[in-house]
Amino acid sequence: MGTLLRQELNLNSSVYKQIANAVNEGKLVPEDVIFGLLSKRLEEGYYRGENGFILDGIPRTRIQAEILDQIADIDLVVNFKCGEVKVVKKNLISAENSSYSVADAGSVSNEKSRIYAQEGKALEGYYRKQQKLLDFQVAGGSGETWQGLLAALHLKHLSAVSSSPKLAA
Image: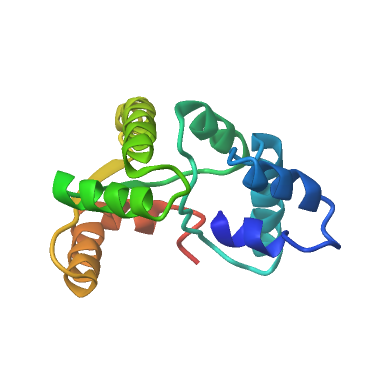
């Protein structure tokens, strides 16, 4: 989603002002803009003969997942789990690079983390209930993670891939 949004950050884009205003105000881009861009991209891919897609950065909430279900068939959701130490380091780096004081940024970051965790639980439950959720523990470097993910997808979801009309060409 980040890539789609960055592509629209040019003056010729019809949604430029909406995206730029949200970013400049530190807010989320409106969902109608997000799903409009996503729908357009999925449709373009369909007409180019693409027979699958991977989304990153969406959905972030259960409501977004429900909207997504109206525009696309989701076969599998990979839930990347990482240790708390990695999350704390990421939040600390974000706090050090922000315009807040480190103490203020830490409390803002803690509140954001709490909200994200709450919304994440609802999202996990939504996909777990549909039996589309694969929890994947991130460990080691990117090479190890990638190899582990490929192995997990092949072993646990070979039948989902081969039976999917969108992925089987």
